[in-house]
Image (cartoon, rainbow, N blue to C red; front, top):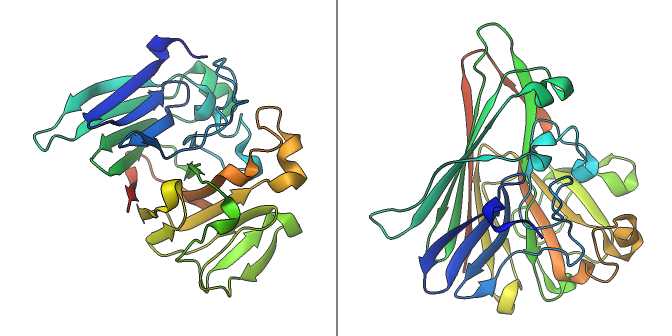
Length: 277
């Protein structure tokens, strides 16, 4: 397991907490009234070398299927705790994490950058505010951005996802073919690996922890990735249990089907709110 010094805990009281591992600035736990909302595999590796399997990994600057570094190298780097945890006048708790380019990142992706990642823990909500800054005076760069959120569920087959009806999606399970979603609510009953494009700003997932609902609200994230490896591909991951797929669903806010183009000296912002209903 990761050393305690690698972990930052936001504690709002009333058994509502959020734990962030500085390795990748990965949210590894979000408990509301002592109920865990996120799935982390029992086989997840906390060795500071590979991405953590579960929670909410942060994907930047490139998204590829299955999000394998080095293209998404910030998942496997140690972030800085810039501020906090700090209690706000509202009683909510915030922390700000940052990471910038280094000699290591320049060997993979030769651009200057700075990311800020602000998390705010409310009573039944977790807020994510992301800033991407291009400090160069002359170089433009393009990037993808994704919050690879693993929700914990009693049985993924009973979940429904709203807000995808009519959206086109890229289906990795069918060689990247493009389809249009005809269902009012999306259900999962097989290996699923899709990028839904131009999705609405809100999704609701039913039958998450204790039969409740989870609301996802997003800004400047035009794509929604839905993923579950099912029994077909659970064995492909050494850090994922063969029988764990029924207890997780990935519904991920992202900007991945087309890149963000960031001019010198400019910034891009995106945000997400998760709310237990």
